Structures are given as C-alpha cells and as structure tokens.
Amino acid sequence: MKRKNSPMKFIVIITLVVVALIVALVVINNNNSESSEGTTLDKQPPIDGQPTLGDSNAPVTVVEFGDFKCPSCKAWGENIYPQLVNDYVDTGKVKFSFINVLFHGEESKLASLAAESVYKQNPEAYWEFHKTLFKAQPSANHDSSWVTTEKILEVASSVSGIDTDQLKSDIESNSGMNEVNKDTELVTEFNVQLTPTIMVNETMIEDPFDYEAIKNAIESALEEN
Image 1 (cartoon, rainbow, N blue to C red):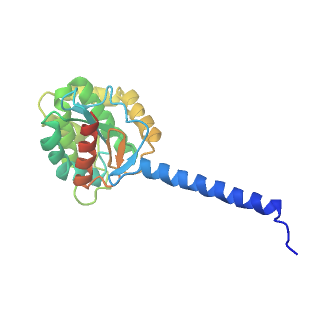
Image 2: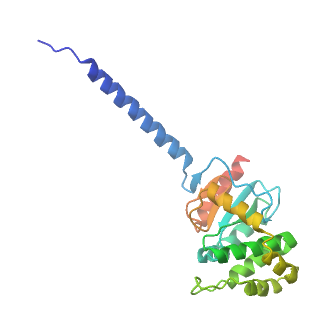
Image 3: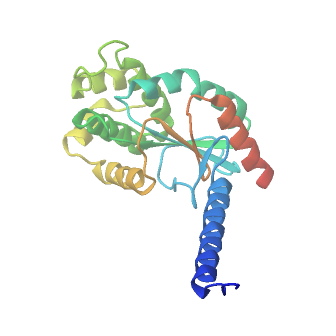
C-alpha cells in the first residue's frame, strides 16, 4: 500500500529551495560589490574644502585617509604617491585629496590642525608642508613624541610661503578644528580601519601598496567616464 506524500514534506522542500535562492542572490550581490582591486561602496568621499592636488576637472578622484604619525603612510607617500602623481595626476586624469585620520591621538590631532592651518593660509604651500612633515617622522621609534608645536614650526620655516607666526597663532587657537572634525566624521562614515586607506572614486583599495590594483581601479573608472 502506497503512503500519501505528506504536505509537510513539500513545505520543507519549498522552504529549502527559497533559502538556497536567497543565499545565491546574496553571493551574487557580494561578488558584484567586490573586485580584485577592493570593495566598491555606494559613494565616494566628498572632497569639497579638502587639500586637493591636480586638475579640479580630472575625471577620477583618489583619496588618501592618512595620519601624519603613521609610518605606513610615510612609506606610502615615499613609494606609491610619486608614481600616482607622475602617471595620473600630472597627466590630468586624477585629482588627489588627503583626509586626516587621528588614530595616534593628540599628536595626530596637532599635526592635522597644523596642516589645515597651512592649507587655509596658503594652499600652494600645503603639499610641500605635507611632504616635509612626513619626512620629519623618525624612521625608528616613530611612536616617540615627535609631533610638537616646535617641530611643526621648524618644518614650516623650511617651506616657502608659510607665515610661521600666523601658524603658531592658529595652532594655539585651534582654528582648524572644524576641518579636522569634518575629516573625523568622514573616517567614521566610510568605516576607515587602517591607515593609509586609499579610495579610487567609490572603490576602497584592499592593499594600498599594490600599485597595480590602484592603476586598475583608475583605468576602470576612466573607462566609465
């Protein structure tokens, strides 16, 4: 005698099929949002008011979330940044912007305040100050307390176009704090966990030292424009 198929069995089968379809859709969506270069978010960091190098009309934006106290940021600036500028910024294809991260506490904050003050005072002097301040970071024992107002003023005095008296006054009055706070909000909004974090338009690069991945992301973005 044949037993009738239980309705409950069909319900279980249908439920399993539905669950399998949902899982498949999630996997497909995840694959669509991740590439060999990194993870694509739903937007790119806004750079209005941020220090920006290159043609303002460049079709692709590269953003570094960086910390002046971070040794990896110093290494990135010495090894990857010059290639990026030579290949893409100087050719008008990319504009590059820097957003401050305060992962190393008060010294990061002080350096960021100084940089924002320099940018406000003389945007043309900002990038030379930026480079020189990173250069002042000690190669060994970088966790030592080296970011001081005195060191900042020493660095600034070696860069043409900076009024060090005005810079000292700006640092003491925290005049750049609104800009620093704006950067901190962006760090939170984009869930930045490590420095440097590099974004090419909406794509957050998985390995900031993989220049080929950065180039591939830029080329992909250029094709879309």
